[in-house]
Length: 322
Image (tube, rainbow, N blue to C red; front, top):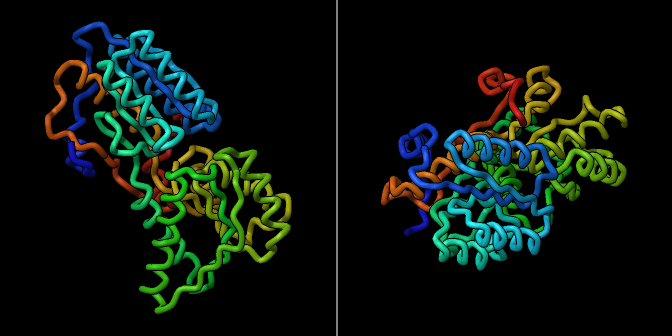
């Protein structure tokens, strides 16, 4: 199977089937590399609900941000008889042997969200386009800065994480391109990078350190909303909220949406955990039932969007788990 991406209407058409109903005994395993952030908890909950609605037994595991544990979780699930596996991988390369072993045992594996190396044996990966979302966020930020240089505090998730890398580079690329297009030059300074481990508490601690070292920050760029929400607390405590534009490369956490709606948070990229998890389970069940189209690509992107005060009402769901 070639490594190609499917986006927009084509992806929707491929996965337009509502919940697939298992024609044989169905046991779905959900291997999350962490449940330590609201996004991942919502993803796991939606995958579970979708599988249970299809009449499947569900087994779920939290890898606790430990690749060795996630590998053991997958091995345990395969040994226990799962026939569909949804995996959010801790490491693109490190999970290859476990995923390959699962596929060799007849398990239908679908990857979600965090990148899994395409050389591994799995059906497809479903995720938002970090590059496309980041590009849109960067373009919005350039317009918001209005020709002012960008002095950025960068909040990253975890070292070596490919999703985080794609997200920050997507925003910075979009920002630079828009600055060049709009004003003929680009002045972008990443004054410091903090590691927030994807959490609100981590974003708060990292932002406190960055504010001390770089008091002239005018943009906070986070690789997810949770860390930016933490950074906002640090800025509020320092009396700096009115001086700084808050943007996240991706996620769409409802607390961020509420602040965007109120004009107290700039923008975020669309990365709906519920849609990704639902599509993944449906795809795994299609494979289990022999209904998966032969031309299913190995990478499927959801549609990108930048969520701002102008369009947040179209996306905000106060009842969402995330």
